[in-house]
Length: 353
Image 1 (cartoon, one colour):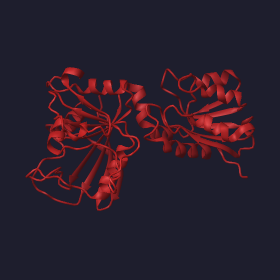
Image 2: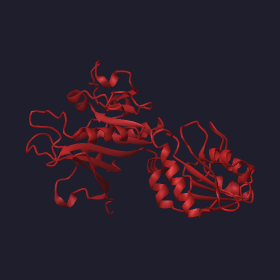
Image 3: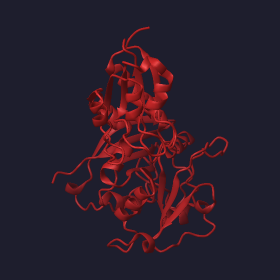
């Protein structure tokens, strides 16, 4: 069979890692490709679920004795600790792997150190291959581990003129079924969905990840979080229906911010402590504005419908901007048509100083 380069193997490992998105948290997504001494692919693996075998272990099991003298190409530094599974660094050494190629060093102090352990055992270790691509594929987990609070995606749906509902308050449905299906797929990749109590009172959403065609629930459901400073969420609200875990986050429990509402940085820190690595902020417009004003949004996913209303609630309210010089600048990274709608993905630009 044809041998492949380390660069090609890393590209494949990154593709494999993506298969674990939405099911591995609070662990990272990881992919691994094993090459034998001649450069032929003899094993592949990815981390499929928390508590399950790591990518390296799956690939080693496929490779068997052909791993000896070969190269392990892995998207994240092999772990060096014993948790629910054993250290991958030791498994690679015991398998007789001669070289390990790593894209991204592990920022988790509990698990890092695998590269040093491998080197001390005489294994050649190289790092940084396709680093940017591997970082992008694991951005939520890496960001969360490096700073101590989750990666936050703000998702909204609006008309072309920026309205999230009509003047009479009706909003069912701003966007098409195709866009709503896409949103449910997005929910399936995060650990928590966050809304304000105003959204619960106005729309009574379920906030579950489900198949819209038959109403069935996804196997894994994100935590439903209602930011509710005064505890106004009704007892019969659909977020309390038992279909998924729910946390009504009050100012009394989390702490109050300067405005008397729930302290948002404290909320994110509490979610991180619960193992939440990626958050989808879905509403409402004032809560989104507060997150943006505090600099807590990492990515924006907007679904824009080819419709005009001319009046009605805006998709965003009070983001701390009073003049054009204070505008929150964005970098568009993707624009895709979903049915009749556009899905626009953007990153807030970091402000100088």
